[in-house]
Image 1 (cartoon, rainbow, N blue to C red):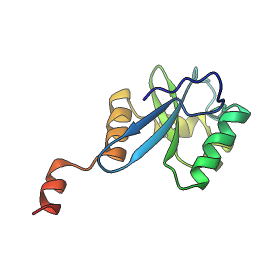
Image 2 (image 1 turned 180 degrees about the vertical axis):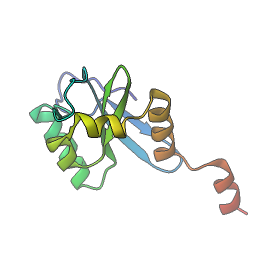
Image 3 (image 1 turned 90 degrees about the vertical axis):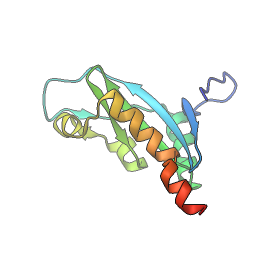
Image 4 (image 1 turned 120 degrees about the horizontal axis):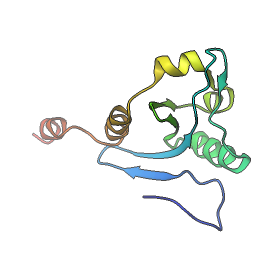
Length: 120
């Protein structure tokens, strides 16, 4: 579900729900800097950081995907959202768009064969 509410600030961009879990995702887009030592920080607004951190503290599944034209990196914990990573680390951790989609799908679904075994 795409979230866009002018009356409630900070809510993550998308909510995914599957047969195993749900996942809130905030997306950020950047242009990759050239220097390997340059820090890449997702750049959440104050309201986004507050909303995402509060949901994370409640035990919700929250991630920030910081993307660029080459792919993106998943930031899974509040300290990562604030501290970021170097450009070099970003490049090492980068997933393609297809890999990011697979990551999201795996976070929210149980593979059908697992479901078949658990109900036998």
